Length: 287
Image (cartoon, rainbow, N blue to C red; front, top):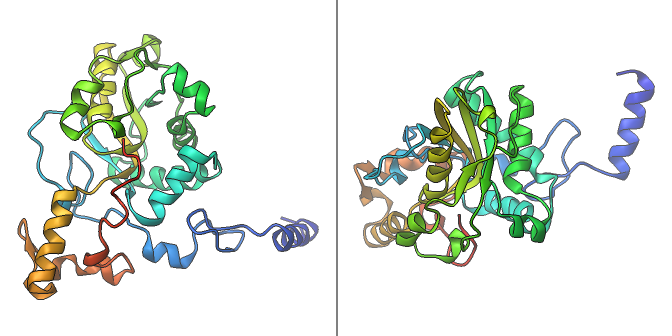
């Protein structure tokens, strides 16, 4: 960059400063996330479940066999990550997809390697939902991930033929039956014999991703790996952690073989305290 370009860039930054995608604080032109958010974002940290992508303290095991091989996520559906995703999903803040998609890409490369798939697909919306919202947030995220990976995006390979109720509007036990058979593959050639990276915004039970992966494999996809922007933390475990903390204090906290001393690194890095985990999860939409 020449001297003139640097001066112009500096002037533009003064007039229209770049802002953190999560809290809107002013950041330098080279940054996308402010230092405070880097510390406070609900990052998914190792050790990670090789199926659902949650940290092992939040994985309850898997009685079902998923049609996809594995799912990963950079964030939990909490705090500032949740707020940024909701702004993208419901308020048209499409610029958030750039930063969120970049974090998803980093997670994909870290967990799957630099060449994880032949093609990228995204979870589709029904025609009525797409007309109402005007865009598919999963496709926006998929465009970022595919672009950074240098892989083609088969944006219209998957279709949602049946306009079922939103997943967040039905109970956990009904989510599997709610999406049963609602997805199909319109462009079989795009996935036939290929390894697919499937992109979505949130994973709770995995029912939506499972049905999409099943449709892809029935259409001839060799394997399906998933990446989502956020994954929920099971509320039953969050409640148990908070109850145990209140009763015994952090020194006596033990859950699923994970004691409080093993959970400290996340808090030391600036993450939420044990008492804050899961706050604000009661009323927002989940997938």
